[in-house]
Length: 171
Image (cartoon, rainbow, N blue to C red; front, side, top):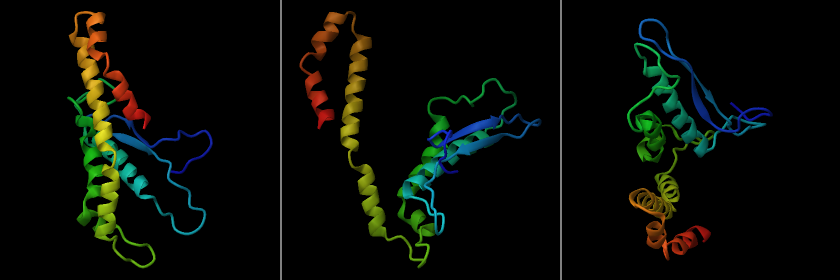
């Protein structure tokens, strides 16, 4: 659960044994790298809790997705269904009532203030507009690349646009 030499430095969830209906129970694992507390209780950072639940969602998807037969290592779902449980568990940490149901100071028992949750949500949303602008440009570029009959037309269509987009990322 903590970082150490030779260990992957990321958080992840991986299937170990696939579930096969009536024959085999699924098994999975979480690889985590929580901050190491040398003294006192094992407290986690807010981002670590969110990441843990996100990866736990992937683990639950693997555990609950028992199939009649195994064809591939990872369950293949339509679209982004594989991410649904992980996104739901991650997003619940923006809800004041949910956070206050268990988010308490470890010494005083004081519930996490709603004003602090509001500030955390605002900080989480900061920069989304810039990110979305970059995504829109990438989508536009992709459409222009795959929707044009020739390179010269693509170059003409992007002429003058590229510097404006690059200036966004430089600031």
